[in-house]
Amino acid sequence: MNGSPEAKAAEIKISFADAEAAAALDALALHRSDGRRRSVHFWDRPQRAATPGTAVTLPLLDRGVILRLRRDDTERGSRPEADMTVKLRPCSALPAPWRKDREGDDWDFTVEEDRTGPVFTPVLAAALQAERNAGAAQAAERSGSLDGMLTDRHRELLGAVGLTGDGLGGLTALGPVNAVKWKQERDGLPRAVAIEEWTIATAATTGHGPRFLEVSVHADLSDAAEAGRLLVDALRGLGIAPPQTGETKTRAVMTALARDLAP
Image 1: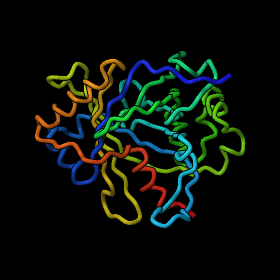
Image 2 (image 1 turned 90 degrees about the vertical axis):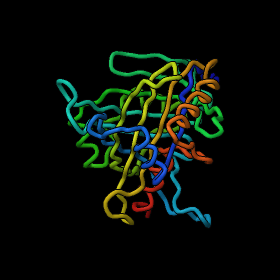
Image 3 (image 1 turned 30 degrees about the horizontal axis):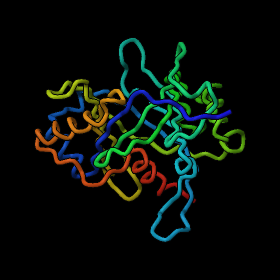
């Protein structure tokens, strides 16, 4: 019998796009050479939308399923790293093994609330992240095939939400997204702040295409509302005005990439 997963923590996020992202990056005094550089790909089945005003549809994303592969662009320590994540957002009822955090030798499963500004409405999310071989990950990016990246646990979780066999067929790789991530300690915030920039090139652009910057912090569920307020105050203290509307960078980036590929 399925039941609702239990979240004990929240990730509070504020996202900026294009000119606002560039201005926020400057105000934060960040240098790309100091961050962790990664290549990010997503998989979905983009289609031209029939609804006026909508460019493309992303069936997996629209049902709350995100398939994401990340790979280090530069070597970290003794070897480059890669990971494959299946994320459910919003997360519906799941079987008992998938209702709380757990981990193995090379994977971890987390349940938390995503709270994106400016409203910070809680959205339940569950993510299974597994380490993968960086060389195999690069091959998957080139071929566009996910076959070697999804583990048995990934497939078990996807099966719990009705995605098996044909449901995972005919997928298209969306990428690359060029990502740079920093972590900083900030006055007034009890935990480190994660800052991640995503840039992409599309057929409609030359040089850099759309740019997104996300500033986020984790907090216990009981402290999440206060953490959101403190994050907004910290940004305003640097002269950064949080945007008046909010969209997750994942949806914005996947939609931008899909416009070039949807049949």
